[in-house]
Amino acid sequence: MDHQHLSTLLWREQELLDLLLFKAEEKQYLILTGKSRWLARIAHEIEVVLEQLRTLEVERAAATEQIAGRLGLEANPSLRTLADCAPAPWNDLYAKHHEALLVLVSELRGLSDANKELIESGLAVINDALATSRPAASAGTYTQSGRASGNAYRSVTLDGSL
Image (cartoon, rainbow, N blue to C red; front, side, top):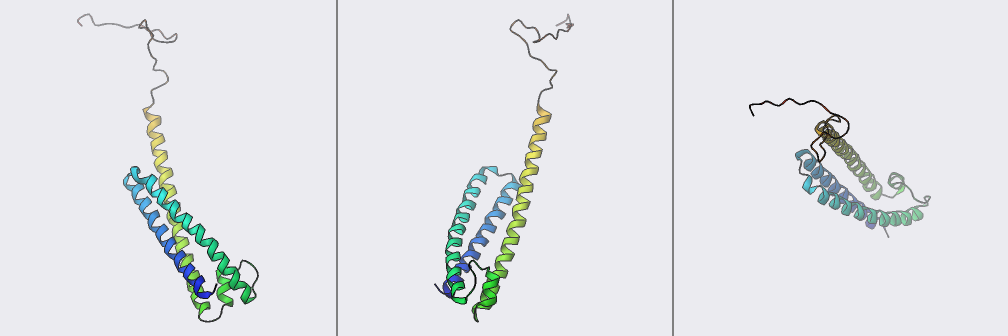
């Protein structure tokens, strides 16, 4: 494996993170518009992209290890460390990959946090609505004989004109 291969993997990782960002924005749109019907589908699509990222990460780690060995670096170096030690023009390219990945991850974290807050506030609204629509504890039911259930007896006045 060489620098070109690692760079290709890093470009692919950026593409997948960008796709993940797009999917997270789609999810936010669905949450904001109340189109909950599609939330399961977008969650599945996000999981597919995450699985592709996990697979790519394994391949990137292997490529990084091999290059790090040739450069005399310790095992599992960061991309920043690799950029600092790589020969030109790879050092500059790795530094640009590093910056781009940081920006994408930062955007993803922010959007993910915002989506989580939207979902939590939506659940709170639903819980409040459910709490206000529950029947009062004092409202009883009736038995087969037509009396109020429990020991709660009360007098009833009927209008004779009915």
